[in-house]
Length: 201
Image (cartoon, rainbow, N blue to C red; front, side, top):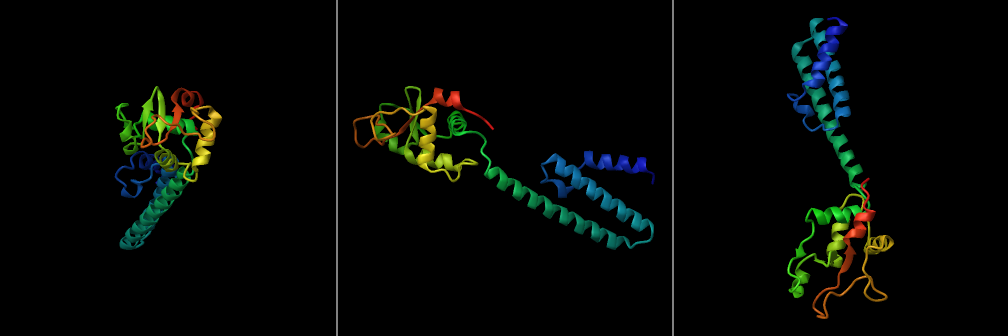
């Protein structure tokens, strides 16, 4: 088989890989191309070996073992990539919170006349500001890639640096929306300031 024919077969193998079950979980195109090239080279070697008289059953077993090894390599690669993504933030805190708000990640109380029910929700939209209770704010942030280890002080200090928090009284960064003591305090976050500081990485 000449070089042109071999190259044509390699190109075809890379282009039409859907039928190769081993590659179904390989989503990175560069990695997939490299592994398909390696698989093709190994298969070509086995074909040459059989033409030279090697046992076909043995070659078939070797091909299956090679595919298993490829699958293990892909699983390992995906695991490592997931770990890397978990430590890489999609954007700064302003972007994360703004994206969460725009995608309805927060359960917000709709009726402003029922603030006594606020403890049953993550927060409320109050005069164009996003008001979030302490726990929902902290839990949401720590669920985001790159923010798993952030504590409440880091979150609040970053929002203060943006100038995104409405401050009602000294010595506290949370505010009261009602004189009713049963209504929980919230962090009142200015959405327009988040928009000004939002950066996607």
